[in-house]
Length: 359
Ligand SMILES: *Cc1c(COP(=O)(O)O)cnc(C)c1O
Image 1 (cartoon, rainbow, N blue to C red):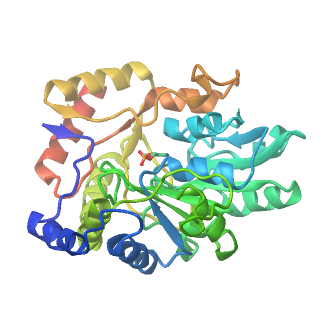
Image 2: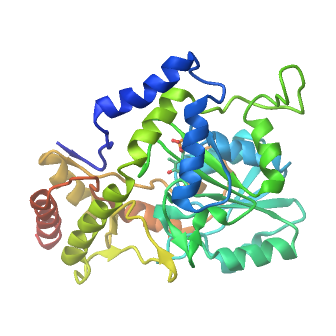
C-alpha cells in the first residue's frame, strides 16, 4: 500500500537513547531538558527567530490570535487545512475570505485591501505547500491599516524566502510537527515570534504561569512533552537526508509532469528555497481527478485531496464566494511523497495517471 505520506521513523534505539535522558531526570514534561535542547537545535537548523515548541500545530494559531488580542474580522485564505479557519472561529473571531492566486495558490494580496473594514484586526494567511505568500505586500498593507499578521507556516519546515527563514515573517508564524508533516514529533508544532512578543506567547502556552504561584493573564496548556521532543531530536538528525531524498522524488515527478499539458503543477514564488513538502497536481476537471483517484486506489495507491473543500464553504462560516479556490480545491490531488519512495512506484503512479487521462 502506498499512501500520500509515510512517517519517517528513526532507528528505535536512537529514540530510546535520547528518551533515556529524560527518564533519568524523572521529568516527562513541564519544560524538561529535551524540549529546551530541541528548541535550540531547531533555531540553529532553521536559522530563524526564537520559537516555542508546542504540543501541536493548531494551538500556536489559537494562542497567536488570543495573545495578539485579535477580535472582529480576520482576513484569511480559503485554501488551506481546516485548522486555519477553525482557529479563527474557535477564538471568537469572524473569518473573511479573500480568494487565492491561481498559480501560487496563496492568498491574492491584491484583493486584501478591498476586504478590510473597520472591524478587521488581522490577516491570517497560509504559505500553502510551503509556497510563500507575497509577504512584502502583505506587510505593507498591514502597516498601513494597523493590522497584525499571522502566517500559518505548517508546511514550511526548512523553507527560506529571499535568503532567510520563512518563519521570520509576520508578527507570528506557526509550524506543525504532526506525523504527516515534513519534520515531525508525532504530534507537535511551534510558534515563532520576535523577542518583544516571546514572553507573552510563552506565558499563554503555559497557563499564564509566571513562576510557581504567579499568574500573568489567561493561558492554556500547549507545552511540548519530553517524549515528543525525543522524537524530534532523533528525527532532526536525518532531516537533511530526508529533504535530499524528497528533492529526488520531486524531480522525478517533474520529469513526468512538467511538460504534460493536461496537468498543472505548483508554481513556486521566485526567491523561494523550497522544502519539497508536497506534490500537488491540478486536473482540468473534478471528473478527471475522481477517475484518476479511483484508478490509483484500485492499485492500493492513496493520494489525498489536499485541500478540499475550499474553506469558505465550511458550515460554520459566513457566505463568501471564492471561485478560484473553490475550483482548484475540486481539482487538486497530492501525490505520494515520502522518504525512500521507490522510483519504480513513482513511475507506475505517473503511468496510471497519464493513462487514465488519455483513456
Ligand atoms: C497540519 C496543519 C495544521 C495543524 O497542525 P496540527 O499539528 O495537526 O495541529 C494547521 N494548518 C495547516 C495548513 C496544516 O496543514
